[in-house]
Length: 98
Image (tube, rainbow, N blue to C red; front, side, top):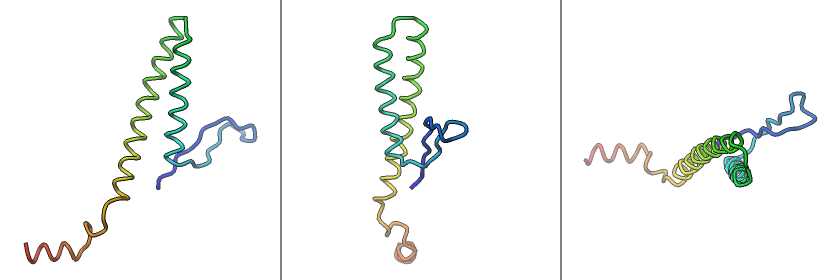
């Protein structure tokens, strides 16, 4: 399984970022939480520039969320694929018997 990296503020890190690996599901959940926060900010924004910034943030987070869920779907499909599909014996049998 691929690992994704968590970029959060950490006072022990010299640059303030924690690059410890997190799972795809954790990354999806963090993106979902960030999206909920962006929607809440948008709902409470009154200044035009702030509204625009929330619109851009929401669009970016939606694209990230879609990308991560597409990756999760691909990983689930690979995990569920039967081993016999890639069997060299199956290829030989289909070649010989048509």
